Image (cartoon, rainbow, N blue to C red):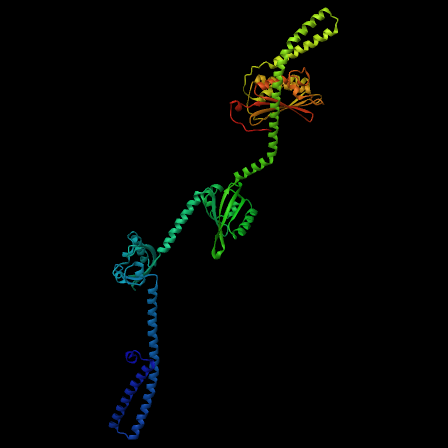
Length: 590
């Protein structure tokens, strides 16, 4: 019936009219035949025949109209259904043709490919006709076949979909990475009858992943190889990554620190909050470089210098930051030492200038005394002969005129001049010096002990300010003891009511210094340089001239200064390393 009323190219109305006409013709024929048969058998009048025929024709016409309407609607439904079926078949066909990959279906036996989409040609390089004779596993790279087979069979056994990533070899020999998603097809009795799925090329994505892996490995190698501490925090300021230098610096293990808030690195809540505010505002503009104080695991607080860079999160917001920090404790110490050095530089320059001035004064004084000594020797030689003659004649006159006072005066002055010349001779006579390595503090202590009875008798107090780590000196200990004893006796002779002597030791770059300071008896010295000459009898300079000579013989020097009614004699001695003994000692002064 469907083939009768629906012909190709025919509308639903034409089909309905065709069905109605066929029905009307058949009904009219049946009515005429039936009426004629009834008339022949039962006999009827012509009017009754016509009326009966008209009534039948009305019934047939109404039935034909009803059939026409019903048939038209039926044909419209059929046409719509056919059109929908055609369109639904067209959608998968278009979809398969445009998919960037291969849709496949294979049978159970060997999984020969029953169907592949057009995308299979671009994926594999094989034409569809060639693929229909292949198994899906024929395309898989040999090294990956066992893995693909094992995982596929496991998923099919559990009736689960499977997802695989493996390599295939295309027709031109190129190796491609693919991702397969598939599932099994089962009969009503649960028997596996085939598979279907989709295979997509992911070679590009795989290359990107491999590049990212290499980049990550390079970053890890760089991060682990640097001596700076590197760490990464997320948007919640929780630590997500650290390098080995970070663990060494702070003393944590990786398990202890990962996932912790950076609060664990700050010495206080205030430090944590302040740094968060500073970093938030600065990282919005770019990177941040700052010096801060952080805390180690053992509680040690130390200064660091850090450089922080933002990590961009979703929608351009800051999703965290990377920090590179280094311990600057040693640099801070050096800066502090430099600052202190600058602050004391003027004082050090002043002290060095004083030392140079004293050395210069000693040098000038030494040259003066050298000249005076040479002149004195010549004068003593020239004076001695006439002085002997004058003394001899004076004695003869005294015998002849014993009551003459003038003769007594001449003899007294002659004897005084002879004594002075004897002192000058002794001064100019060389001294046998046997220098060796000695501890100056020990010699000073022994000298004070030797003078103990004298100092106690004169009620003199001695304050010893001895530097505890004084280097050794290259001197003759017996001669140096004689020098210290003579100088302290000289100091006692210069004092009046205030009797206190201060002895202080210290050292410089090349020499060891001993200061002997004592008050002066309410007056200034007449001429300090005269104390170093051997012509005075008693008084202020007793023993100083010989002291100067002895120090000079040992390579040392003696200088003098006066301030605030106090006299200061400074003895400089050669350090052992300057004479070829011991090592270099830096300058120290208490």
